View (cartoon, one colour):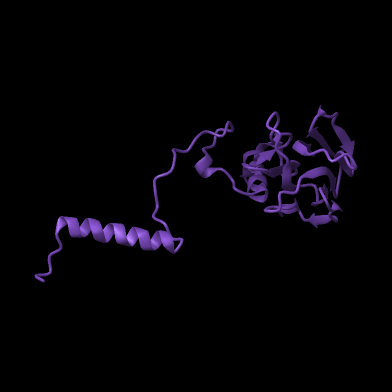
Length: 199
């Protein structure tokens, strides 16, 4: 061979490399959809991916409110969807009108001294309390098991917390405030579909 590759040879080589990379689970990069606005003045490409990242970002935005601004951010893992984007301070995590269960919830706080969560899960019951300091992700529930969350208990280290839940066949139940608070149902096999949390 003279060291030159024909045009058709280059195309065949490119297809072969792509096939090998794809078979090895290392597919090629493709341009994804354009970043969209998340409704909070931030593109999805630059949006925080975890609750703890969102807490830090929100506290940075709220510097004028003082260093002690209380905040809670969270995101839900939803059946058939996976992890949703993070919402904060009363934003809706989960879905309504789609008959989808929340399967897991990731929550982080700022300036409340940390939090504790417990989830009541299909086939398990109360999962067990999980706690974390401020700016730390605390996760309850399961992923990859198709196991619905039915109730959620939330407590913070200082002050109070409020929560509200959207439940299968019942819709939005009234919000509750205290420390800790529990939303949802137990013993009724009803899925928790959406939740809102405030501190």
